[in-house]
Length: 291
Image (cartoon, rainbow, N blue to C red; front, side, top):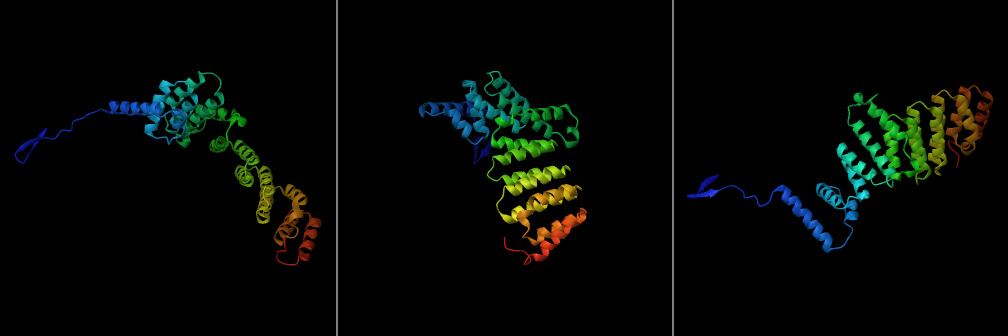
């Protein structure tokens, strides 16, 4: 095509020097040459790089040259899952599985992740009762907890919650708490899940574990009262009174707590204990004694 400009015919087409495929090949050639000139572990570089389209292309090129780099292939499989490219991800996982049993745990985890993302991609009404839902729950229940990283354990708990596996999610939060620097928050999460699913006794137990994990008095008091409230909400007055008897000693100088315990005893029909709390309450020096 041409156009008239100042009396001259000027060609307006852009000459294409290089097509898309040639450009990609050229970039890959540059990467390989740079790797050869500046010795370093390209596989490690790719694993630590920000994953974008260019890095992904480098991964593909590297794995063609080094098909046994299973660690990089695992990373690629995970990225494919997150992108929703499930068939390609399974192809990568099948290749890893074909190399032996060194990464069986990693492959099983990523297959769980793949099924979970496939399931979550469906409308909520289309998930329930499907074979995919059944298989995903089966994979979840078969996970080797001891082989999971901290990040994977948290991811496991969130998946269990999304799959309506409340007990598995609460147990996961409790197990995470054991090795956490902030165990109280994980026990509290477990309690909330258990309470939401009507497991009042387990929720109260989790609140007490959260209480025992904190040294701050006000936080401990909050968790203790939460445990009592949960048991009362579940109609478990006997268990609430038993818990009060076991754990009240730390709170008998606190007017608010003693008053709540008095009301609990009254509602539970234990008037002897209610009178005892009333006497303690009357002997407290102020609205809240020093702790």
